[in-house]
Length: 175
Image (cartoon, rainbow, N blue to C red; front, side, top):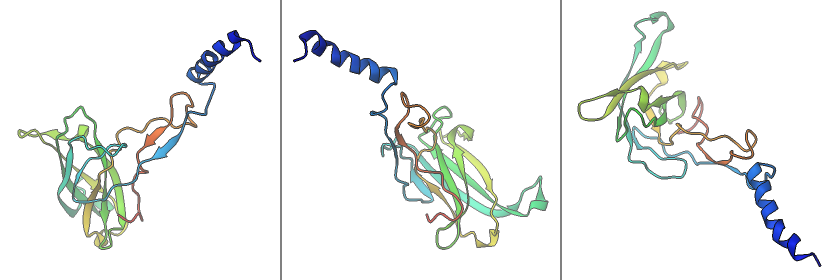
């Protein structure tokens, strides 16, 4: 039998070890599931909650970049964030897709990089470089918020772990 004093101190020692980062048995990493892409999406955080932000592609066209026309056609798109402010930093992936919704080029857009409009919306534009611009059939947004990706367990056992956003979309991904 263990003395009563040893039994009383053991739970305290385990708490100290766990808080000091000496134990990795509490750290787990998971990845959120990628949401359905669309022209207009409600932003979803890593926990599947909707923070009340909507993003929409309001238009797009193929055109030469005015400063580097020698690079050929780019996908010039315009977007709108509703329900976000310039400080919220919401971020979603935007992709040019072909007829089968296969990504031809993608990037992340941030509400903090958009311009405030009189109606409270934040609007902006961007350009996507794609290898075959003639194949572009549309521009889609992926609703997963990419603005916050906590450290992984491998990077920091003590403070890492938790749910991470899905990998950013890339060329060849089916959306």
